[in-house]
Length: 359
Image (cartoon, rainbow, N blue to C red):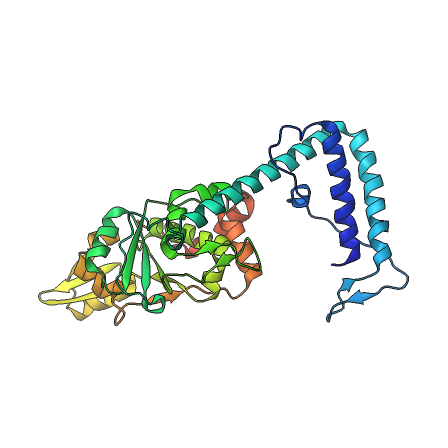
């Protein structure tokens, strides 16, 4: 960073603002355009040669020569001004893109404010579908995000009401990787997650940062069916957490439940299996004639079975969600959940042999 980037931003923003004002395309806007709107989605490589460079900061990676700002700004302004005058059609498209970015920013801000106003700690009340726990200490509380009312009903019956809350989600939540930000904050299921967790948008340092001061549960457990559809729903929820509640993951609050795939039973003896191999080993121990029940969904378990296998802290297995590399995680979510098909197709072709596809 440094003065060369400041000069580029100044030259770009000033020139585009001047052209947009003169074109009359901003006249009907009911809110102001900001500098970020002109630069939204832009990637630039700024290279300058300075005879006596001065660097700032401890790492000496920020250029500090003040004269560079005006030099770069003037150069960018002159070139961009000529381009806009010579290419009016492209100029119109650029201004329309700026307007769209401003509208999206404005809508996202309103949606964030709506989420913040409706959180339980600001008097909005808890979501109607949330079955809360009685414990008041967030460090002792956990909430299960469960797909569908059927599984949610079983989970409500099987849970320990003292410290376990249940929030049923309606089917597959929005794929936030493909949605505009204001659509994300307008989505009812996502607003319910914000409200139930008690988190808000905005801190004293950053108006867009996640505020965890009033987090109501220190364990947030994603509990979905142990099949392909359930895995997809879990991935959609994880995508939302990574993009909009990354701090929760980094603080170690997000987990994935691991319900069993099979119940192997013979007479009064029974065991649960999480893999085909475990199922076969148990069946062999029982003489090869055990009855085997395949759980196609959480709703097929009764409340006692769900508690024993998936919710009881003494016996359950939870997988904590962690981020080893933010850059790599960003790349993977973009590839698997984003708009671009070719990278996803290539990934599927390379990893098809490892796929676990329900019969």
